[in-house]
Length: 64
Image (cartoon, rainbow, N blue to C red; front, side):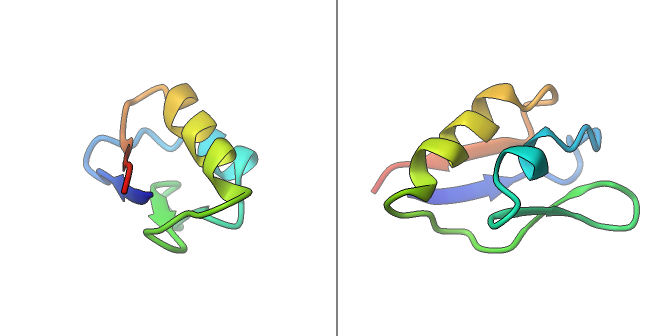
């Protein structure tokens, strides 16, 4: 799956980082950064969960 983030929409809640710190990080302002734009295997459910709980809707996934 391909992961996308919209840094202009991100509010810095950090729920994505708490859900899957191997994929999501935050910059000094608290804005989401992607450690990778792809997820496979065991990461997929956690990435989907992070997208679902993101309060600003800044995250999205596209299935392969």
